[in-house]
Length: 197
Image (cartoon, rainbow, N blue to C red; front, side, top):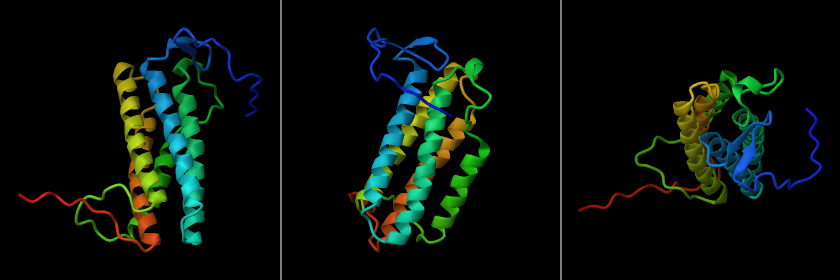
């Protein structure tokens, strides 16, 4: 799909509205804009995860995680495109989020969970830069999921429900990837220590 951007600023959004794919103008405060803006934010945090991962040993772990995160970034861009398009304006060739995308994440979760010790407490975000960024991505992913659910509450036809399933599975995957990253570096997970009375 060819994309040509001739000018970054257009000034058309100065009044608090923006155009969806297809040209329909909506308020920037709308649930649809909030949803695809949060998916875009998540994509940016995944970029931070990938950058941190470049400097985290071991190298064998870096490559496999980076390949997954690179694929996820493209899938999130596709999801953002779907959220920025009204159902009646979807193009036949527009990439969709389908069951196979969530299924791929499930396989990756299962593969990494096999190597992880069972949890005896909740894990706290931390354990190195990559793991910390993966936890940050997980929280933004949960917020993106809530935004899409809110959009669907307002309009059940706003986007295919696979979007919610995908984001739900992605947040689980990011959690497991964070745990697996700590394991691959031979470090101990940071566990929640409840205050004793």
